[in-house]
Length: 398
Ligand code: FEO
Image (tube, rainbow, N blue to C red; front, side):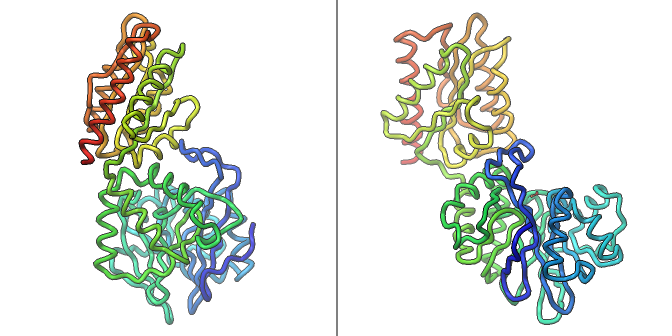
């Protein structure tokens, strides 16, 4: 439960905070999250999105603080994923299942599948309007941002964009607006982009172009997670424009794990080689750094360097976890290199190079593999690999 949060005249945030969640299907949420929902009062009262089912009581309490939930006339579902639709069955039961539920075509299909429900669906597509009194709700499908059903609802007169997951952040705190929290929210937004929207970057670019072409006046952005962008919504739009370009940068991420410190020594030597060429480096041990934080660093890096010892003819399990995760998020425009120590068979470097190829990364070198413990020559080779990675990156950037 929390205080009534007014966004504009007759428009309220009525969602809830999930203070405890630390793992959002594989994404580390160190500061919890919020499930935002929005109440728009008028000739007809409209609720935009709901919250995770376990928080339906909070949603209903927050609505009750403003109006009797039974007075909700219309529900809009921008996105059917359970963190935003989980409370729909309970809500519809209370307000009446005959009340209109607006969603995209895929939204209807998903909601029927999720809840085996027969709500009073009203399917909308891009350009459709819902006129209620002095307000116009305009719908914009945003397929694959990040689900096939995703859509935005734009309140024309007030210039308020209800953007579903886009422009969100997994953050639960005592602040609710961008002007209250300032730039400390940006790392949360960046992590959200890297872990949720990165594979759809070309669609983000297309969407931003469409928004510019449509000349939408956006005064406030209300995402379904995190703070509301009411003071400077262009800040997050500009950040999305930058992140979605995935331009090369002079930063390398060295990701590794180690059994007996051999691969770790190589990782440090490679990092020193990279830094000796004035390229920024992040050294990330896969047992110390969460996969979602690693991907966040990769978002604006130019080089991905991965080290693994050979274990049972394969790569180390934690490294495999991170590589699988990176592959799914499809980062673009990266150069890559592999390294690792081994005892007798030494397949890890070859396997990592194969994975880089599958991800479309440009491999700068066959990599460095060392039997058992790296000696002075091996560490020099590792350092030189770092130099080569940095030089390649600088050449591409020039
Ligand atoms: Fe926040 Fe795609 O759900």
